[in-house]
Image 1 (cartoon, rainbow, N blue to C red):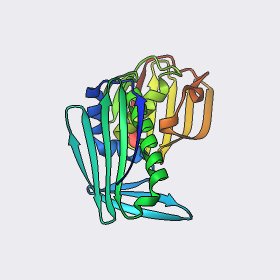
Image 2: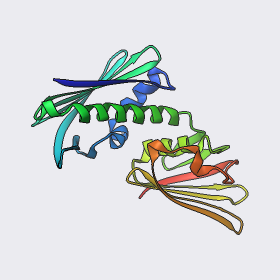
Image 3: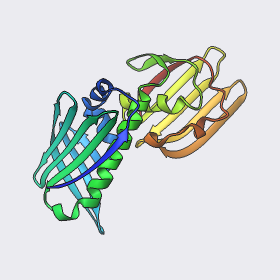
Image 4: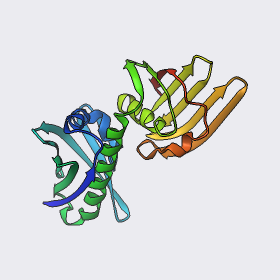
Length: 228
């Protein structure tokens, strides 16, 4: 069996991690090599040399006292991803037993690192300034460049990789964010007759405050989101 591990600091408790990891349908789309998740079957596409090899699996999720295990079973082998809390660090281990095992070192390393980064970003999103969010509507206060990325990531957890987030403040300020294939594509803010529009192609999990700097967002917004 080939295995690779990575340890990261996470800004969350183990209880928060369990909540995030217990819903793989929300987290899997942000994993490296992810292609699809339908009817309980997960498909990854792993690039090696000049070829792309597709891997399809049935997923089992096991949750223990301080450990969560994703076991992906497929015709070409078994992929195991283990999440374990060690002190204040999260250790992510990706292991593969099956076809092409000897060549899977680098893909497994990238897989473990990418998963760890995605989980860390989702943990950060749990601190977003959402006051209430029921179904497709909610309320958010005091959006600033430092908290706006967490808001977008939190909505991504609810609605996946394709959605539109809209908000309106009491003074009429309008906010629209479009996300497609897990990337922020457009950010639009309108205040009176003045409108600011930014086109981008930034992965949600890599989103930082820079995109939102200088925008008039420091107010309370009624928000709504919908899948595209």
